Amino acid sequence: QQHLAESGGGSVQSGGSLKLSCTTSGYIDSNYCMGWFRQSLGTEREAVASVSSGGGISYYADSVKGRFTISRDDAKNSAYLQMDNLKPEDTALYYCAAADLCSESSYRTRWYDYWGRAQYYNFWGQGTQVTVSS
Image 1 (spheres, rainbow, N blue to C red):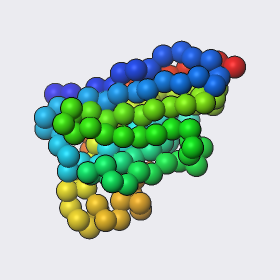
Image 2 (cartoon, one colour):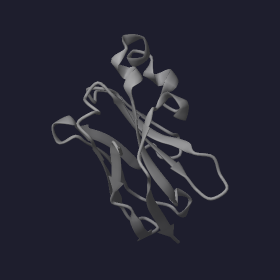
Image 3 (cartoon, rainbow, N blue to C red):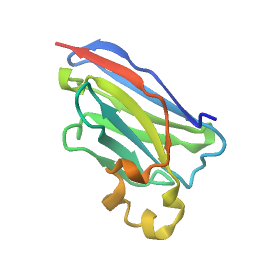
Image 4 (cartoon, rainbow, N blue to C red):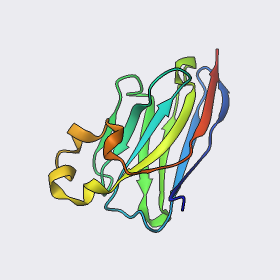
């Protein structure tokens, strides 16, 4: 069963914007931390952003700080990634991920140590392609 589904990818010119959406199944609730990762051809999957359970704290890769914004709406079973001022180097397949470790206080209070590592997420979507042309 697929618990996460991404949408909103597409092709834009440099400087443009896109908003990615991640719809979760009811199995994934507000106790999960949510994250976005990306992977381009020939590279490893890299963390882009994460938002804590409850949505109070967000984390970003240095390469997207000030341009991307992660958010969540648990009432709609959704997480989002607003991407502004896109650059060609943002071209990648973008994945939504969920981590149930955040239901444990030992991980939730130290999520700043774990958010960027894929092994701490146990649910993944199939990805949505983002292509930015110069």
